[in-house]
Length: 231
Image: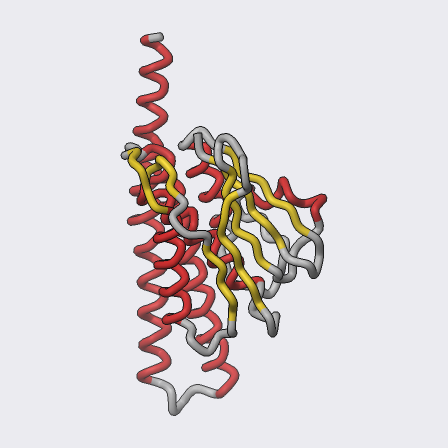
């Protein structure tokens, strides 16, 4: 038992060291490259051809994508070992706050009908569950953007013990044979959509830390439903 505990502590320390390396050692050169591209665009814009300017802007876009991947990796790392503070949490209130934020950030994005079952309470870590719900709702929001009658629902399965919650949308869906791949880091089933491919891996990590379970059901072109329970 003592040996196992020491091994676990060493693993956690190595993870913390990795997180520092990612946040510092990898971000520093990215900042330098971004600064150089900004200087080139500002100081030599009249001398640069349209083709060169477009390529520099493309570099900036790829740098931003790399920043987002690093940010999500750091978030995944922190979630794995930060302490849990379990208490009763109103999930419906959190969902409503996230929905309001999404609507304010992209008011012209598309019209979506949200149906939120009121006063769903769960014992969980509020901060981590907020991250989980944010990821699931942003996914639903993103993949319903081509729907004229987009609809996203949050609720619970009647008479489920422990309670099974769900987030359901009528978006593009996915082939159910790939359902297990959704929660692997860097797995993206849909090209042409923003995202680092780490969001659902983070969702599963949070559920696992609560001793729960998450799974998804879908059909191509008919939307998707993500179910989860917390123990």
